[in-house]
Every structure is written in C-alpha cells, then in structure tokens.
Amino acid sequence: MLCSLCSFNNTPDASACERCGKKFLDKIPKTTQSSEETSLAGPIKTGEIHIEEKNKKKEPLILVVEDNSIVRLMVQTILSVEGYRIIEATDGRSGINKALQEKPDLILMDILLPSLNGIDAISILKRDPKTHNIPVIAISCLDTKKDVMSAIEAGCNDYVKKPFTPELLIQKIQKFLPRNR
Image (cartoon, rainbow, N blue to C red; front, top):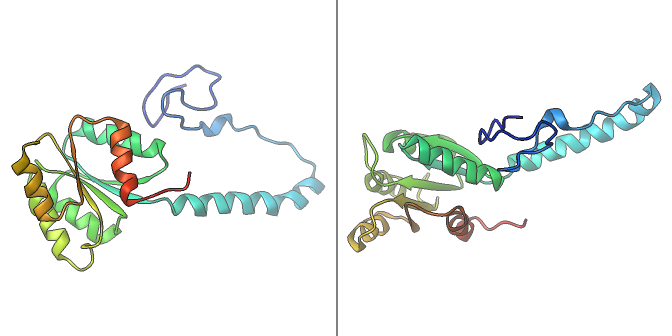
C-alpha cells in the first residue's frame, strides 16, 4: 500500500505507514451492529469522532516558507508525523501574505528566497502588529556568524542550518510550541 504522505510502498496488510506512521483509513475495522445497537451507539461514536476532529484542529499551525520543493516536502513530512498542521509558501511575499491571512503559531523561513528574501520578509512580519508575536525560525544553508546575526537582527527567534536532522528541527520548534505528548 502506497502512503499518500511520504510515498513509501508498504506491505499490503499494513494498517499504518511503516516509514512515517500515517494511519490508512481503509484499514480501520468496520463494525456491524443491529439497528438497536446503532441507535444507542450512534451518538456516542459521532461524539467521539467530533471530539477527535476538534482536537486535531487545535494542533499548532506552522507556516513553512521554502522555495526548494524537496526541502519543503521533507519538512512537511517531519511536521505531519509530529501532528502539526502545515501551510506553505514558496517565496517571501507569499509567506507574508499567508502569515497575515492564516495567523500561524510558528513560521519556518528559508533565507534565500525568490521575489523577497527571508531576511526582508522576517523584518516586515516583525514590524506588523498582526504578526510580530509569531515566532520565526530561520532555515538556511548560510551559516557564517554574519548570516546568523542578520537573521536574529531581523527578528528571528532561532536559526537552523541546512542540512538538519528531524530531531533538531522538532527540538527547535518545541522551544516555542511546547507540547504534551
């Protein structure tokens, strides 16, 4: 069974992806009940599903601003496995627009971006009262002291150098979005 999240080809009887852990909805066992059982159990099941959906929507929303599709997919996979909700932008201008529209809980911002670089985008977001409190973590292959200082001066809360491990990225995110898991 092919995972729609990470494209891993799992064994046919897998109930969840062996790589990323995504559960396969068509593998959830279906129960058969008489009409009496359905009328008694129906509202309880519906309530449980409704609560699950509500809780899922409360997961932190992270805006990923990254022009490289491979890096963007990797970050999306890491964050999805951890249960975060994700929105994406591929350049600085669309990143600013998405941040203003969606009000994410955290922003992961590449520095080398088309149309408007990450440093300028961060400066604009940090000057805007609607977005100035959103934590921003810069993600970049640039790693000189000057590069890091430029990002911090623009308003970044932290900096991650590419390439990075999933553990490092999650550790940095959890500094700003602590979770009870």
